[in-house]
Image 1: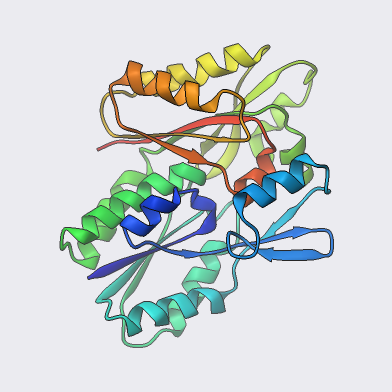
Image 2: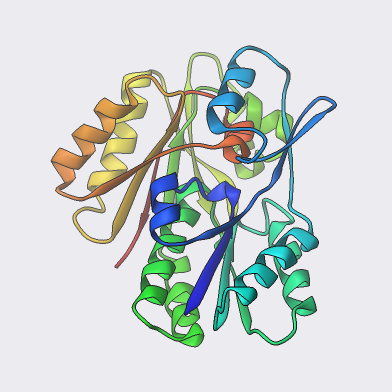
Length: 275
């Protein structure tokens, strides 16, 4: 059996992680002098409670190569025939580099590693697809080749309440073009070539919702679709609307601490990968 490994920026819902037996290597979250292992020592709810209560601006740190090696060795001990790893974009985090270094230290078990060029459910949908392919009995090479073929087709858009968190975290990238005239606008960002870029701006929350709905419907009914948010008002209603209008099974996901650190609360986003 080929086993799938990713990192905690993927935002895959817990029930899907369990169903597909996906191994998660967590990043680290820092609030001032306090440091937490994502989703192990700090739950998603605890993270949002701290952030919205004004506990200070958190920071994220990539996992060590040792953390990936521990995960690989555990899977080897459980009888894995090979390991396929998909990580957050290497332009956003050193996580990919850590996964590669760990693979070089592992003896006796083949490991292939893919840079997703994405994050959150743009990464998560790729991971789920790879896990389903592996569960069908596909070889490591087959799982890898299919996953590589999906990378260029990944779409991710997100409407933010503010760019302030991206600015402070140093992840603003091409979205810096939106900084001028930020008053009373909702920035729309996307990922291009693995980095954050501007995708427009709207004046109201309702127009931001319409933009994300439009991006979803323009890609329906084929492929895989996810809608994600982090302490986002009316999130469930938006998911229900997209599900009804797209005719697709929509994976609803809550942003975790890694992406939430850089997006802030109130995000509404979508991710899609082709069949």
